[in-house]
Length: 329
Ligand code: COA
Image: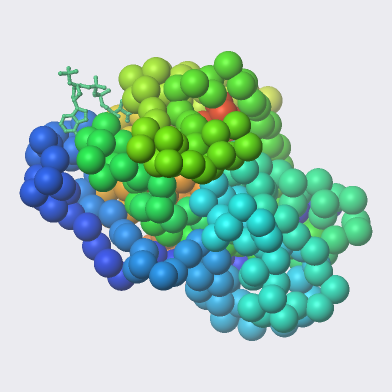
């Protein structure tokens, strides 16, 4: 038995921030951002709204596509590093919005790899035969933790959400998946304030500890190696190559990271999905948004083999091979 994705949905806020807007208050240019990252614009959520709002909108799309009876959902996994609040979990807020009966759920923190960690968790829960309909959401309101005076980080991220429904299937779904963590990378991408170590205080606010800190060059190198190594392993042990793989969906952090990884894997351009130009890095939302875009553009059809891969803060990383199970018409 496989754990199969049977419906997908995405949500992007309407408010578009073009690269050129950063030129008004930062020492940067549209040209620098485009050439170094591939990003042209990103979305920003309106003040007063939070991650649960975007997650609910993405789930509503997923429900509509297959006329899902939401009360059959038995578990909600929300991958995010920007929950509405530290507690209660965003999963509880989503359950309450839909008033789903007999369901449990939780938030999962694995940064940009969050969606893959959620998907593999759903895979294990489905294989336990205890759970039959699991929603996995990747959502992040990165604008809530960015320092807009820091040109190294503020230009890189955007807000968004993507959601999938995972159900048992005899023929389609996750064929293989491998994940990893290495906490020695924690000093290169992190948010020092707001947790139990540096509880929110005047000092943490003054020192801007409630914002993302990153050593971009170190993360870049580890991201290419991390995604290449683990995807190569998955490809080798499942006889996947550039002839039988339909689509490679990598976490959208930097166009150069995706190109470098896919070139090392000897994949052709048309096998690689890139949408970072429109949304920037939406952290846990990047892969489910990309899956949703691939479906909307009919880039994948039933029986196609696709690979999802991600790398993120932690460090965390993973790769997942699927036999796609949703028909494209
Ligand atoms: N505009 C203009 N110049 C900028 C800039 C910006 N927005 N951001 C950084 N620079 C400058 C740097 O200060 C540096 O200047 P210096 O040489 O005078 O010190 C110069 O550009 C080159 O910096 P460097 O870090 O070598 O650039 P880069 O080509 O590595 O690109 C990143 C920077 C952040 C885009 C890139 O390292 C990256 O994408 N890293 C991975 C980030 C990531 O994916 N994180 C999410 C988790 S997966």
